[in-house]
Image 1 (cartoon, helix red, strand yellow):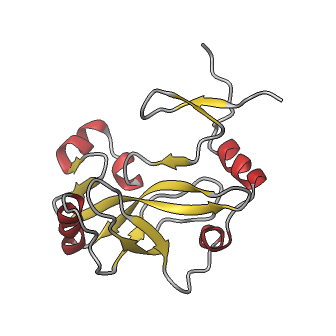
Image 2: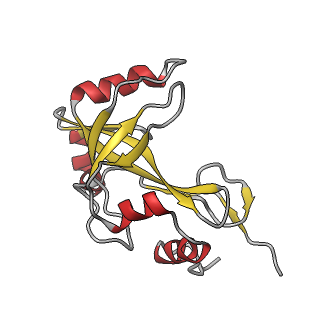
Length: 173
């Protein structure tokens, strides 16, 4: 049996096994803008985004348990939030203690391999200094991704997700 490794697109290092996270660089609506429109209308970094100085987004992790191992697959995904939540996240990011208040938002990325995920309601938990918030689906959300967050996914499903994302596609060197 051969060992599976991959080179992380974030840190550039080689890791054993299959990737246990996958992220979106921007909210879909912002990403779809032309380069010039994005420059004019959006302010963003890896964790925060503001569009037209009126819409606010934060990037968090939506964890999916891997049932065959003691780990999770994390979707690095964006949620639209109100200004108060956006500003509270900025404060929590620099704080030693997580904020206890429960916040809410709406997903703004469509996750490949699922029916429409943009527009699904999530709860948001800030995790303190330097950590991205955790997103969990709101009670009553009926969706395949919400079901997988509750029930977990098998190793085969993990592989299928990576296949859908194009992880195994051969590239020309």
